[in-house]
Image (cartoon, rainbow, N blue to C red; front, top):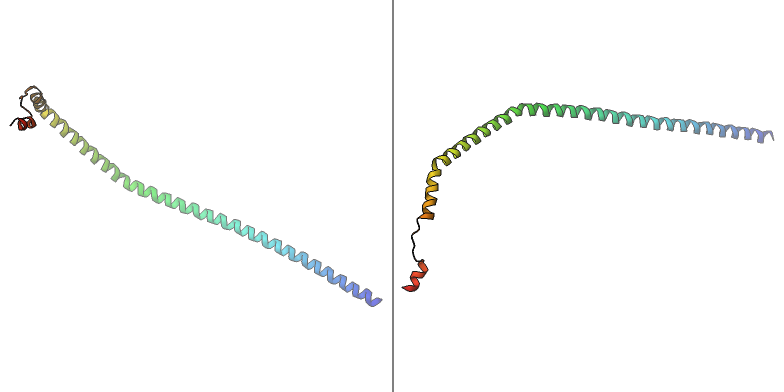
Length: 126
């Protein structure tokens, strides 16, 4: 009987030890999960920070590029405006110089009519 009691106490103590080990393992697993979650949060925060820094650098690079080429664009626009004005002046001068001759030619064609038989009509009569 004493042996059974002793064996039962040892089994009980073994079960108690297993239960404590299981609780300790569950704690370790929970800590590992929390550690993993925290590491993921840290990694996301770090990635977000790097993305923001990269975005700022690219925006600065773009602004620098834009400001360095803005003068070129305005110079090109000024040159195009000057060329357009010159072409408009040439067209206006040409119009003013030739309008009287064009009106005279049009009036001559309309007013001075030479009546002639149509060329197909002359072939039929011949």
